[in-house]
Amino acid sequence: MSNATDDFIRVHGNLSYVNTWLKLISLVLLLVCLMLGGALLVKIMDSRVEHVVPIVINERTGDAIAVDYRVVDAAGEERSPFEVRKFCEDFLADAYTYNKYTVKTKLESLSRSTSPEALHQVREALKLAHRSELLGRNAQGLAEVTSYMITESKPLLKVQLYFTTKVLSQLDEIMEEDSSLGAFVIKPVKRSTRNPHGLIIIDYRQSPFQNKSEVQ
Image (cartoon, rainbow, N blue to C red; front, top):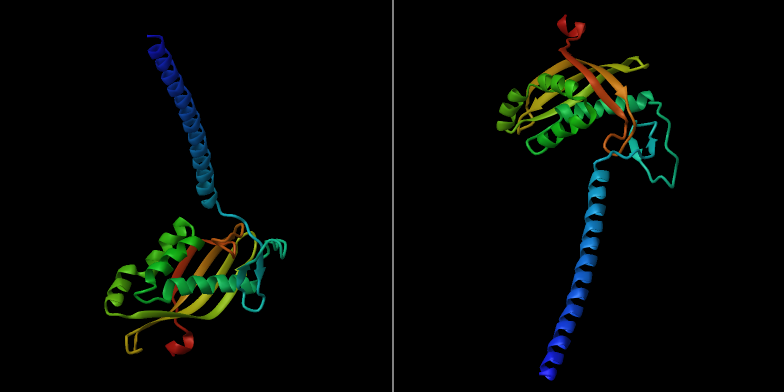
């Protein structure tokens, strides 16, 4: 009986020892999982934040280019006329230069530089229902700036931009052609990778425009 008792005690002791180590390993794994989960959560939250990055402006073209922070310090918040014009031209390209493959992406791009209120105004100006009909006929749109003027620079930027839009058929025949005046009210904001120019359209008005010489 003593041998059986000793065997039982040894087996029970070994099981307790193994169980203790298993519990310890499980606790360590749980802590590691919690740490990894926390790190992943922080990474996800951080990825949703717009990080301010250094921007270099090409004064000739108005392009805003994000650069490595180790190369150059962040540029000032002053916007040159070249940059404002480039911003407006990019806006028109997203709004009126399209085909059936790019139309969705370009419309989504407009939201990155337009406030929700102004985006509603822009969508009305674009006549999206009519555009859908044109796309159904494999048409494509083009836009060209003909005249540009900054009428006010502080505290908000106010810009008047004259432009022409064309709708071309598959055979590059002009299906529609219009001249318009776009009136922008633009607010400077912090530059970011999402919005390198650091400009947001907060009000947009568009009206048909016809040159007096054309009327005569």
